[in-house]
Amino acid sequence: MIREFQEPDWAQVWPIVAEVVRARETFVYDPEMTAEQAYDTWVEAAPGRTVVAVDGERVLGTAKMGTNRPGPGSHVATASFMVAREARCRGVGTALCRHAVGWARERGYAGMQFNAVVESNASAVELYRREGFAVVGTVPGAFAHPTLGRVGLHVMYQEF
Image (cartoon, rainbow, N blue to C red):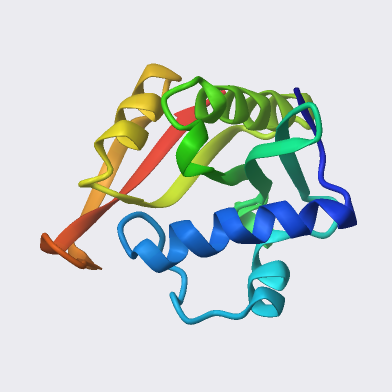
């Protein structure tokens, strides 16, 4: 089940965010960020939205979504997703992606853009392609991967 993030969820969301960010393999966030900094970065203020995917009381993953850029770019949405290690390959990321796309469509956005998809994150790239996104550009060497060295960051887009 996917539902709106609630303040008590942070106790389970923070460990997911910390693990993903500190692995340095898929997100451009500072791996030394504190829980407070992560909260300010991850939890979107309205009109954006932050959600959690839960199994009972257990948080399996989280997503944030909102307007990609203000002003003349405000007709395009964006989203980010994180899934707990033990919940990966179980459809949680797909469910979160579909939820974010549905949210954006319902609000009348013209499309959704992912600004920095690490090209070596094959499971995410494949998921987004399966859900209708295309790589519209790649910034070569823009991400310092801990074992692969510098790899590209994809910009991915889906027009609605």
